Length: 94
Length: 363
Image (cartoon, rainbow over all chains, first blue to last red; front, side, top):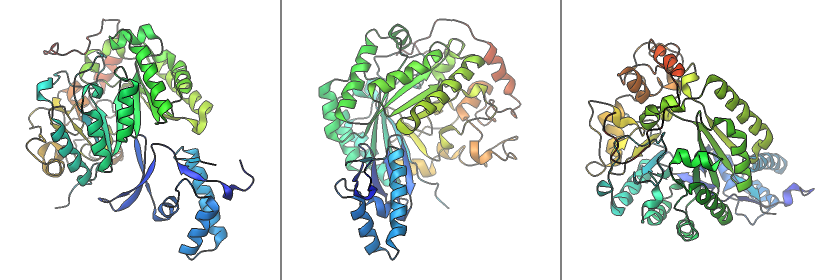
């Protein structure tokens, strides 16, 4: 674990993806044997998970897009990504 | 009129052909012959309609879906429609060429079934010599490709004591998920219930072993545990409620709310060759028959759990009580619970009735 978690690069694990459910008009994470509904805030984070940008970059980008203090966004993003890594939906690319 | 919520997942039974003969197979006792199977083009139309209807995940199943030569073509099409693709296989027909074709078609996930960890017992249950080695090889190929792998173990009286070794095998092979599923007693499983039903002590040991594995693996491995509902006090919410989340299409194109539903008498089974999938889901008599709570008898009707378990399993109610609209007899509040209690003590070591084509006359 890097001492600066914002320097890490998250990526979707193979077999997991974010997808727009056009019929129900919501975002879902498609994963082995299940689909999770994600809210619009989580979707905004996950849309920026490309496998080649750092968390710092994602947080900066969200801070520009949404009118909220960077530290609030950073703490939300870090805990959400850690949770999804724990559930094997995301992995650390570096 | 409000339309019912759209289905989440589709079980596509591509064929009933299978090299294995497991005595608890979820296929109906009357297996469908190859001549009646839907064509490639018919399945492609079904996947188009499923995606438009709101299905998110397609489970390619059988029989053994890998006997279909068009499997990777079907996967490729489903992927193109945005459907999540899961292959439910015995693995005995897997080789690097077949996996390569599936992987490049975009297959998302493989669920590989094992009958046991001990090869002799595994092959006794599956009825196929040499199967275990082929399955191990299949698992290695999937993991080497990088695709996520689930190992599925159906457990029963003859193998339930080896759950810890099942987890060892999953870890050794690099599986990300494990399903330990107690046998469900419909169709073939019901015919073999006396030989398969575990004892209460075995059930408790299995719960203990799964809890220990959860402790041991933490979040490294996702674990699904399906308990045998005969020993439960409350029924399971079968398929998440009749006609609420799930649809099953048989090899010949019949559309069912669950894989055992063809046992339900007095109703026409809709067919994708004749009717569009949306119309079947939204308007057919079959899908409407036990949807929601209006059909419920007492004690379900006034039960606080009626929107949790949806009255339990219709096919189990039918198989045990003769009435598809009865409360699932697993429920402690069912007047028919005695039938389940009686079955629990009626076990013996009778030989299996293996799942085979042409041996399915009423018996």
